[in-house]
Length: 69
Image 1: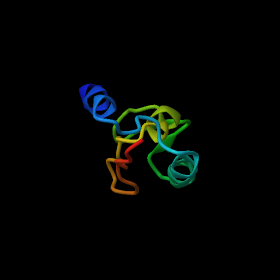
Image 2: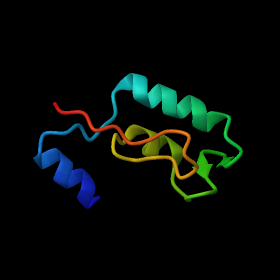
Image 3: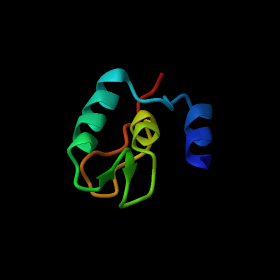
């Protein structure tokens, strides 16, 4: 959470753009670690994690995006 606050104060997007969210969600939808919307690898809620720009997949399927406003 601190990373998101730090980034927001410096002018970075906290929420990922729609295209990034869709890309991430499509990868998670077919992932073997997807257990009814929760990642069994990191225990996150997939929908929430794919929305946050600075989050990354623990399995390396997608990475954080640092985009200035």
